[in-house]
Image: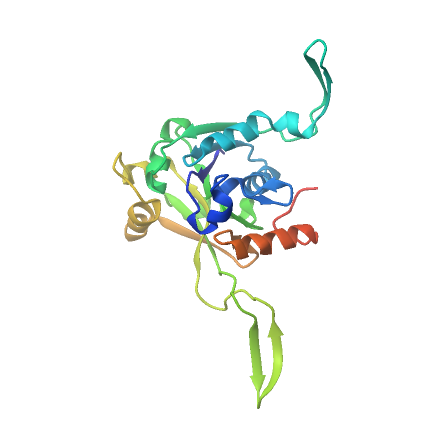
Length: 257
């Protein structure tokens, strides 16, 4: 199953970083968040990706064009101008389609422009700015049982503050930044059947408002609930949180060796 990643937005709330690189290329550790997302999919054997590019798409292209060189051991002979690649430095056997979808195109428009790259088959879709530890096999099973055109992963957003329980002025329980106890949001890990394209056209802008909302009205949108880890990278605070988890070796989304 091909994986679509919407990777064309500006990421204005990360302007300190995205003036230089697009949001999916902001690093967690020594690799961009886009790489972390793709590694998660590849652990479930989904290794063919269609990236919808927009803002600073050339940075994403350069990253993958130089992917093997940047992680390999190389000998360079300056006299002859030749070089020898001794090893790839990576065992990632991905196929990546890097598709320009416009600088200011909305999420729905970007997906519509990818139609020719998706064959007439179901496909996975996510955004280029969020990680989680969702079981993609379970997501696929939910989708198949539903028989609907689309399935979204529902998550509980992380709280911005620590949670307190107290009695008579004494704290009885403290949880540092727990998941919110109620309320679900779209976590951005989705499966679509080809039939979703009848819900969009050349003028479609928003995937969320113009496509997902109408699918819900038509009762064609199923849900897979995920109680585990999920975190988007909307702000510098979010980025520092993800960076800290990664550096401490406690990144819940890391399912690979």
